[in-house]
Amino acid sequence: MNTQKILTLQDILKPVEKSLAIVEDLVMKNLETDIPLLTEVGQYILKSGGKRIRPAMLLLASGAFGEISEHACQAANVVEYIHTATLLHDDVVDNANLRRSKKSARSIWGNEASVLVGDYLFTVSFKFLATFQNLRVIEAMSRATTMMARGEILQLTRSYETATLKDYLEIVDHKTSSLMGAAMEIGAILGGAEESTQHSFYECGRHIGTCFQLIDDALDYEIDNTGLGKQAGTDLKERKITLPLSHLLGEASDQDRTNIIDILDEDIITDQHFSKVCQMIQKYGSLEYTIQQAGKFAEKAKKCLFDIPDNSCKQSIFQLIDFLVLRKK
Image 1 (spheres, rainbow, N blue to C red):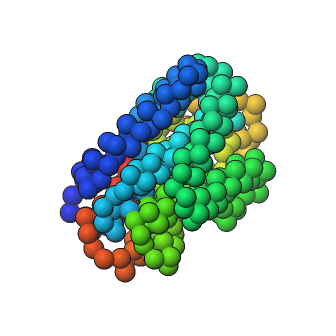
Image 2: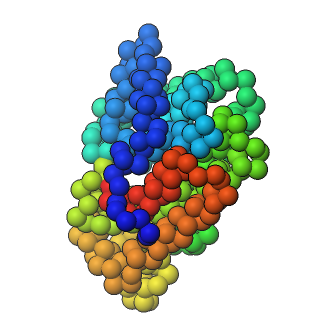
């Protein structure tokens, strides 16, 4: 990296600090309903320590073209709602008991409440977007949410035994990258960018999303990482296809691969099993490979914006990309 010092996320987001504060107020205010359970569950997960990366990406994209409008702040709120809805649904699918180092909503209120509150967040999001009367914004978000649903189904149908790098990246592109791409595209739309520039921001956001997920997957195999917000080894124990595991299965010797498959075929994957897999991931350089791939997507993201005039928001986007590659949680 060419950055002379590693900035904090707070430093990076200074150009949109005031707008993010407005978004934070909207996130909580718009969930105040006459149904106590809905308000309680929604506000619980929205207060549980998320970094608001996606709303920030939208605001930075919009700010790259001038003043950040009220519509941009409301759209950033919507992006956070959509993201939160997917977290509620994911925790049900994964039977997760933790979310951002706290009890998951499903473990407190049950699966039914988590699914229904997630559904509400999806539907109310499009209600807010409709008030913009901007078809391109609605199209961008509709495309993203459709891709996200496809990604969940793809993940269910792909096996760790047969999944390729292409399969893995397709799942990531659908589940994670599509929403980050849409966030930046919508920011550019609301900022008044030309259509070709809107597409450049979409591609930038997609590459950022893939980089973000690759680092997230790498962090899951770091035993001493206490800041990830979930127990180390969760991806392995849930038998999720991630790049460190995919790379390991591709590079391991026949004997080591057989040992890994035997662990994955166990009824319950224990901490001892996780430790053994981590030793092999270190042996075959799977984390280094994953981080290297993340760096490639980070550079692709930056290239998308090389022709965009320089300002504080564009600089912050580049700094955010570096931050995501170097993050430890």
